[in-house]
Image (cartoon, rainbow, N blue to C red; front, side, top):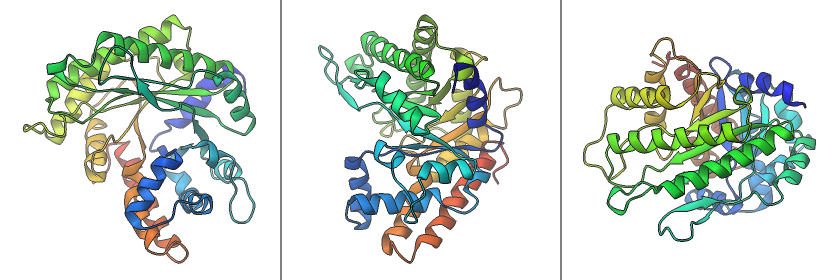
Length: 335
């Protein structure tokens, strides 16, 4: 795929009423999820779980793409069909997580930067050959106002890494999804979150510009502007939607094809309600959709975990229902 095709792929990722399902948990993270439902973390169980998700009947009606883990991109259904083929046959674009997680930022206690740039060019070329159409890289920004977090250094280091990653993706013919996640943990209020999120986004797009990244072939995976989990003053659905939209309008260029939100530890219901409320705003410069992980999977995982052989159909019904509700929320039409 050439760079000229990237805008078309990016637009397909945020097609009206569709969003992204994130099933890119590392083996260590999926073990934590499996432990909660008593499922052993084996390669076969991981494969069976991802097959349950990706073969959900009608999933492509509301899901435009799926972010996969390296292992999953290479796996097949129990009948021997590559997951990537199953996805493309159902109109779902294969994506791939390419970062290697966070590491402490030297000199700045409590702050982190994301690893994975070494060897990334070669990995991206391989992933393109395996059928990946887009990739994802996550940066992590913690808020602790008393301790001066996030520092300008942390913001700039992560923006720089995201921009280098994005440029390498486009060189390989892959749409970069850039994810600067502002973490919900902490006591900060919604105004603090607004200030930090706006600063992070402005630094990100400045870095993307400096690295000659084509915005028309890029997708932003954004945090919602929301109070910290431990803040005594939690915000209404309307306030979260208003703050988030105003922050995005202030910092995100209109040339971007679209924005997808991470759920970031919100409940399934809150993540959907906030997205739905944002899409009631008229004349937005870009589509606002979703790229949810736990908010798409948690209910289905509980059902599947009770009987991984016989509960596949029941679990898939829940996956489809969550996809449908979030697809409607991406149009402001979820009741």
